[in-house]
Image (cartoon, rainbow, N blue to C red; front, side, top):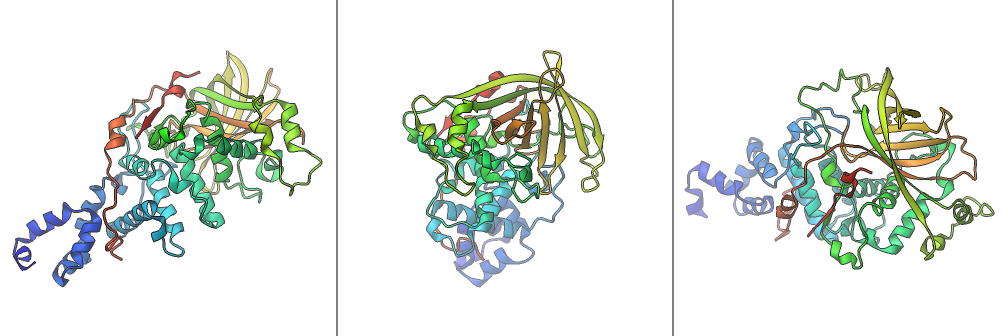
Length: 449
């Protein structure tokens, strides 16, 4: 060790910078001199390099889901420690300390929601954060662990990460699909208190991510082909409702703070939706039961159960905006949509109390609203992931049908480099000192091992 410490400081630092953060932490424990060098308050440049070499995106170049720059000062050491601890817990859940699971989920969510924007849908700039998280969570075991007793906040965070992630291995199982359908088609989940959408029933307007994740699952299984052996999907499935499509699209010359159409509404959108036979829907919801009684989902396991998936293209344009005092640079946007030249849709886009982008619209023939839809933009503002949500009738009668939808702007996104998704190494070698303290695009998919 004495020989090593006799080296010039810049060489010692270079050795440290070539280490995995776990190894750098272990090295710091070998002697007081190295501990002082690595953990000194002036050593932020070391932690910054360790963070970026994982590799992860520079937080100073990232944007929030609403497109705002990240203004908080970066504490590189703390961020590295949290990311490496999250990596350790994902691979070895038994290492999770009491109360730590929430912090791990918050760390992962930050990585998949604070991202560098891309200038256009045809960009091939894939965020390092998304590649790293996809490699870390491949297979989705961490997102499906039923042995854990989670708090309400933890359940919501895990469902939110799952929605952004895409499909896990378990999602390909028939039983899992039945579970999601049972939630999505339960009429009791659509009430005036949650605006008949995937929001909390407490009237807060906050998103119910467990509901949204079930909607994602139902829609996704119509996009990605089924497999006979779910283990074949133990890597990561790339398709338009998965991590690589979460980045905000903000052209270089666009200032969202002054742009009327900050949500990128104007253009052609594909609206895909699902529904099942109304008689089967009523049978499943069994109005003879109370709202507290458990519904019988066996209907969805019957060989003759049919769920229809359909799509139509809508030309949308902005009608006007309304000032939102809580979000002065993200005003409410009113829009209208035409199908085959006929006015069919009208609605608005606004920011939720939880700082998410909410869509509301009604649709019908001849200007008469027949259907009402509530959705949420997944990923950052204008992302190619699109909007997920639920539809009901505009009258909201108790026995009226319900179902999920997916709204996605028709673009020609860049091809995701599958090799990039394979090349990231997130393996953990040791826990020593682990924390130091009909759009063709819809059918694009690939399994990454």
